[in-house]
Length: 73
Image 1 (cartoon, rainbow, N blue to C red):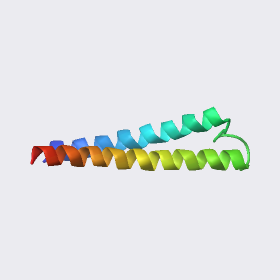
Image 2: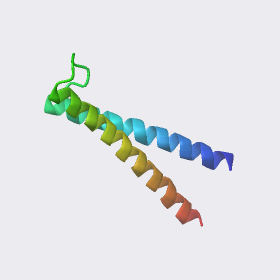
Image 3: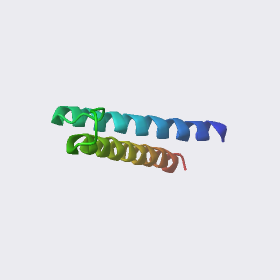
């Protein structure tokens, strides 16, 4: 039980961070800087990309864990 919870927690963390980093780098490729001074349209777009990337990465990680559970059953 503990190993399953550890796997789920680690996969959530890795999925979220990986997705957020992917969103960050997509923003960098578009020329949007999340760390620029003030809140211009480009920095808000970069913030949105990081948030969406983190959420999508988390959902993909959860689907992966669920598919592993289905194969074990």
